[in-house]
Length: 322
Image (cartoon, rainbow, N blue to C red; front, side):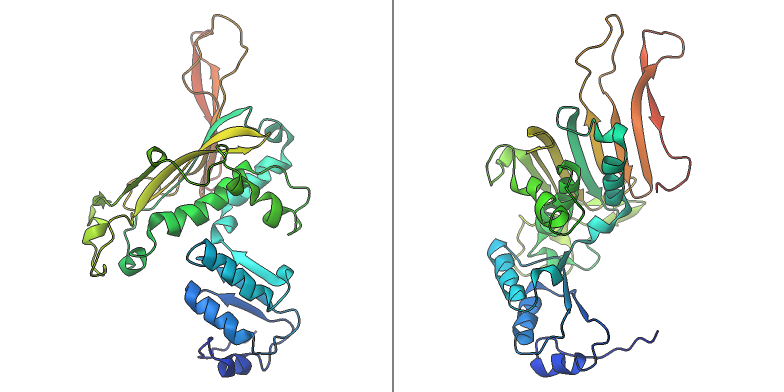
């Protein structure tokens, strides 16, 4: 197949008409642009004859706030039917997230215990070894909360905490069931208490490479906003998975030494009934998910003392989790 490149201003009607002159079998328009440009492009598209069946796909950030997102939705609704609009978050296509879907809904032994009654807490963490890498100007207006936590990590949390969808149809899975955990905090509050959130802009060293604090990064605006953190942690609870509150923690950070993005860590509830006399470890069953690993920690009998429990890890034999 041949690929061609055309230089165009997608906010100009004339340029859009030129691009759509030969749409082929079906046209897909992928918006990998800032929210303001996406809104202007939608305005220009309103004056253009859009080929039937055209798909509009938009990467995050989808608007800059709730009002902006709703406004962008209204603009899109005037262009094509909702079934032809795709709001894309590439974290949902990562192997770690897809593994959650497969393990949860295709394995009876896991599905029966994946609930707030059996899972004590969930940690979703994404730590990077990179710094800003020239993105200081962007982070002047975003920060880790907007760039990572309220989009990517909330999406992953929704996959972990959502009720089993009736179908994988777009009406049930992405639009209704997947969005419910983010809309239903256990406290009923739409704001998070200050003591439940932590942010930071600290300097660090990763693999022998010194990285400056965010406030000292080159390319910052003339009036740095110190509240725009490069890393952050949030703790809350979702009233899902059996309608009980499930404690959850979301975290993201740059300049973090270690394995990189850790993924999901569901940790099991302590057994309410067990034979007397055994000594139970502090932690119960836990699992760790990541892009290149998926393992489960279990309590097993010790090698010498039948009443002493130890931790054992079950992991795939291949180097990369499927």
